[in-house]
Image 1 (cartoon, one colour):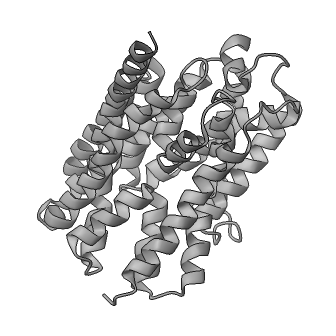
Image 2 (cartoon, rainbow over the protein chains, first blue to last red):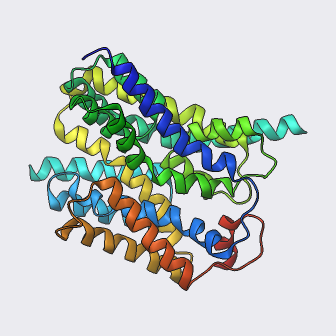
Length: 102
Length: 248
C-alpha cells in the first residue's frame, strides 16, 4: 500500500461525516410541510426494505440458503421483532443450510 | 433529577446497543477479511471502520483504494454509497428536540448508522443525546473490533461461517421493517412493493447495471414519494415519525 492511504481515509471520512451530520445539524425546526413530513416518515422503512431484499437471498451464493434465511428471518421478525433474535436466527439457518447443501 | 434522566437514557441506549454490537462484530468480520486480502495492515483496516462505520461505504473504500482511484473518485463513491444517510439524517433530525445543542447533533451524526437509526426511530417521542450515545458507545466498538478480528483471523474461518456471520445484518433489518408492516395496511403495501421493485431492479437489464448504492437511492425516493402523495401522514403531532404509531 502506498502512503496515500491516510489521504484516502481523510477524504472518505469527511464525506461520510458531512452526509450524516449536516442535515440534522442545519434542519432544526420541525418541518411543517405535510409532503416532506410524510416522505421522511416513509424513507427509513422503504430504504431498509430495498436494502434487505433481494440481497438477503443472493448473498449466501446458494439461492435455497438465501430463501431459507429470508423465510426464517421474516417469520422471526413477524413474531418477535427482537433485533438479536432475528439476527441470530438468520445466522444459524444460513450456517446450517450452508453446511447441508454445500 | 436531570442526572438521573441522563443515566437512565444512557443505560437504555446501551441495552439496545448490545445486540447491535454483536451483529456489527459478526458483520464487519467480512470487511476485515476484505481489507487483509487487499494487503492492508489490520490496524489500518480497523481505523477505516472506526472512522466510517458503514458497510457499503467501507466496501467502496477498499475497492477504490485497491483500484488506486483518484481522490475525487473516492469522494463520489463515498457520497453514493452513503447518500441514504442524507435522508436518514433529515428524518432523525425531526425526532430530536429543536433545542438539542449543535455539538450533540454533530456527534450523533458521526454515529448515524442504519441499525442505530432504526433503533432510534422505533422509540416513541424525541430521541435524547444520552440515549444515542449509549447505543454508540456499545455498538460502534463492536464494528471496529469485528473488523480487526476479521483482518487478523478471518482467513482461518471457513467461508460458510463467514457468510453466516455476515447475514446477521439482514436479520436486523428485517427485525426493524417487518414489525412495522404489521402496524398498517399502507406500511405493509409500501414495504412489500419496495422489496418487489428492488427485486425487479436487480433483474432488469439497464437498471441492473446501476451500482447498488444508486439503486437503493432511486428506489427509496421513488417509493417514498408515491407513498407520501397517496397516503400522506395526518397533520398534527410535533414529531412526525411518531404519527404512524398513533395512526395505526
